[in-house]
Length: 221
Ligand code: SAM
Image (tube, rainbow, N blue to C red; front, side):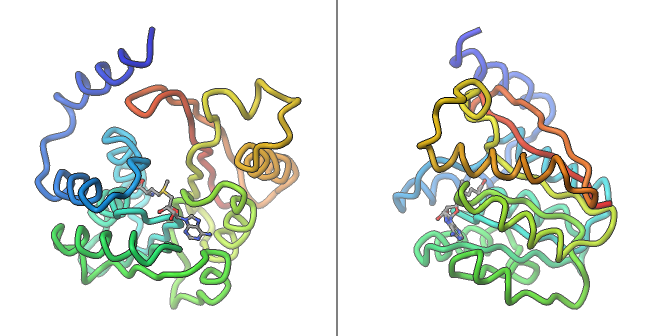
């Protein structure tokens, strides 16, 4: 199978399972028009995040890495009326495009976008209630820091998902590559997880419109 086929395959399946959605399409278009990189999750992955949050009845969601708010909208839509989502973004520009997109999706009341380096913002978070679900998708060298903060801020049974951990196989298949800061960030997280008794996790490799990559899916014990 070549990568072009992965996108076609996603599109085929999405046709049956994921209806067209004005707000999500607007978010993608508005992000491109404002010059944001097209590095958001795929449609099918966005739906997976949504299903996953709904499956545990998540009321409080934390996201690290907002970009234009595409995954934020998928996750925000999983929330009940009194649900809350906090999303962290270092770029003022990305955050401002995200706020527009989130407003267009009718989620402004539930979603708060906080601007600044996530490592700093996370330290200041002391939510009224612990989070039920965390999606980590910012700079990869920060993964371990974000994961440890996510653990501090989540209840038992919470889901913590980390994106882009396979990277076309680079993380596993090129052991001599010790220069790539993104690869190193993921290896460091994996080494930590091996001995962490407070979570249980698995890596899921994913091939689709975003190429060959994968997520770490973990549960707070
Ligand atoms: N989750 C988004 C989605 O799927 O729609 C995509 C997020 S994109 C892959 C990563 C984002 O993390 C970028 O917008 C980038 O500016 C942001 N970022 C990078 N370093 C960061 C940091 N130290 N703190 C917070 N955000 C950061």
